[in-house]
Image 1 (cartoon, rainbow, N blue to C red):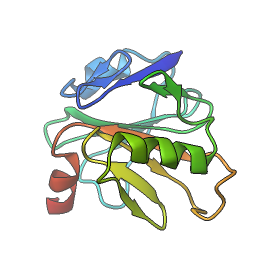
Image 2 (cartoon, rainbow, N blue to C red):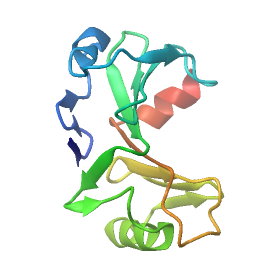
Image 3 (cartoon, rainbow, N blue to C red):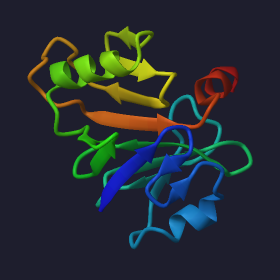
Image 4 (cartoon, rainbow, N blue to C red):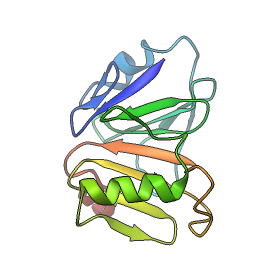
Length: 143
């Protein structure tokens, strides 16, 4: 499956605001559910799909994160397969206020971010891509 990100709306068949039970019905596999360090609700991880789904306190989906083997696209670009340097340059061209740090980047303008352990290795692919609903990081910081 190709996961096409629609900024601040959702990704593929997942619409931000969908309840956990509705999201779980979209997958053939049962999720591994766990508490991520800074989350107040369980995260569902679909290992075969390479998809993490995050929920708010009402069990509504507010972000989705991808790792391999997921196939993620945004604006017709394959994101997980691009070398970090090219992906970061592309994201900079789409958001002149792109937030960058030692672990990746976040585009608040477009609702997309990328994470890697080694930001200095620009030839390697990014490890994860996240898409999120408006206000996700403000809410995550308060929780």
